[in-house]
Length: 241
Image 1 (cartoon, one colour):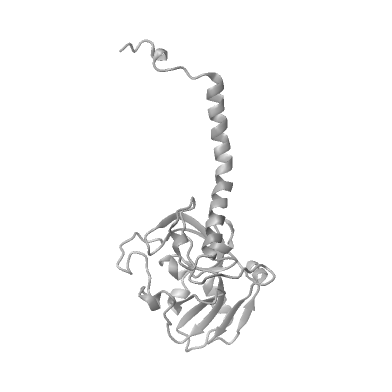
Image 2 (image 1 turned 120 degrees about the horizontal axis):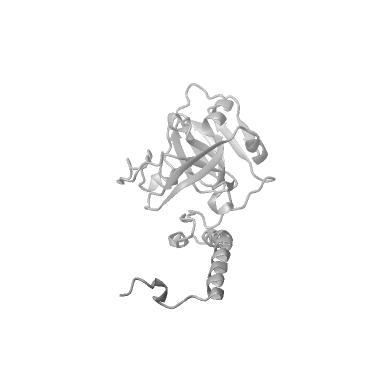
């Protein structure tokens, strides 16, 4: 092999081909985010109409899977969305989306881990700390837990009061630095950073303070109530926070 003339190896690439390749690469960089958003939107919309849950098995560029336990979920916007806070509180409250956006916002970046195995690293979430909403409601001495309901009419979740007061538990309004879309549980969802993602209830509509933990939708079907990532459900995933 003659190493003195490396330019003679292989077939020369013409200038037009080279520039064309660069152009295609640039188009790919520009087009990738819209294409990914389009794919996510398509899969999310299909999941809304798929009571079997099979749509959730399809991969997408964002790494998420779309699950819904209801055959369809109504859409809410700034005009129609309401979040009620009631139960063992002295100040029951109803928040609009504008009310929630006006409260101090917390942003955090954590991995998202699903109990079914998939993981999305370094996912930004932002919203209002749940502890702030609970403090504003003035909890009664008998308060021990928090129950969450959703406007899909089916899904529920619960946390102990100590869990709900953690700094990494949010009433989330944004994900991946954009407003929560419908497929991701928007306009408002729960986000419980250190637990498996089924605890982060989508389409959040109610926060009820109770005297005991009431198992949620999946917990009534066998999942662990205390769903710490890597320390529950028979899994050993790395913690998310």
